Length: 105
Image 1 (cartoon, rainbow, N blue to C red):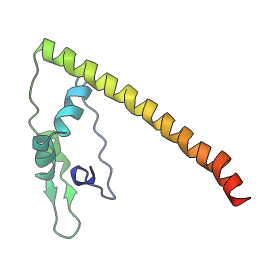
Image 2 (image 1 turned 120 degrees about the horizontal axis):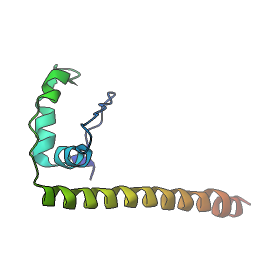
Image 3 (image 1 turned 180 degrees about the vertical axis):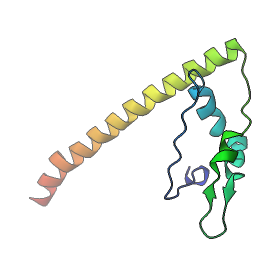
Image 4 (image 1 turned 135 degrees about the vertical axis):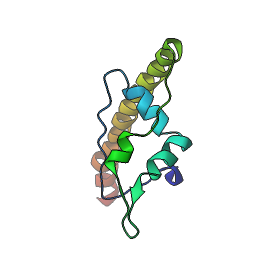
């Protein structure tokens, strides 16, 4: 839900080491990961993240079995998001191109 998302004018681009992207994304999506990211914020009116603190955030290590399971689930989640985006775009197209023109006629 929206309560789990923080939006700002800033975009934080993370370039994880090869093979660590799924683990980093999954960890930073947890409550603990979100709190750790929030702990790097500085400033009062418009907080921003201190990149030196972001780079030093602890991230748990995984054994090879857990890493393989995580990668499988994250790859499935990414594929599902792509399919969901395409399905939503098609639903919007149907409304815009087929339903609304007839409705306004």
